[in-house]
Image (cartoon, rainbow, N blue to C red):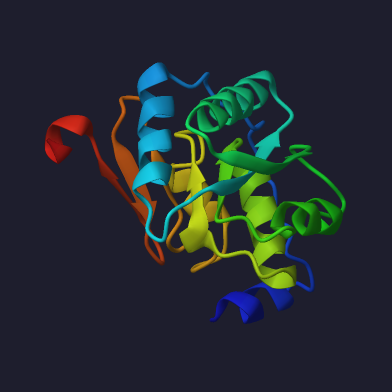
Length: 182
């Protein structure tokens, strides 16, 4: 079943919340921040402008603030910072704000459930491209991929807490830790 058809079959891109209580993400690490900045800097065509999106929990806010500071220190520009709740009746307003402005790349700091909700709405209602999106380790989980419809996150990549990288394929996530990359 295709991405759009899978979402329309329930008439809503909302993810059915798991039975367990969602957990806030862990704080990001210096190695993770460095790896994420390196991924952005290595991207071709060159990334100069970014839009940051984050959940409202303390770890996601801190990650977004640190990334913004690091990106500006490199001479990059942050076009917008958009935040969203972990759950919402509608994600459309947040999605439109996040996708606006045509940045060279988007960067995300969030927990799996909230990001899956946001990503589903982005794919359904905007021109957002996961292949131009980078994220912290909190997003790079099998749980995130499972919560989003197949193909929703394809091309999304990010950094692990140890300074490695990960990327999402159609149905899975592939991790490479620093020792495997060296």
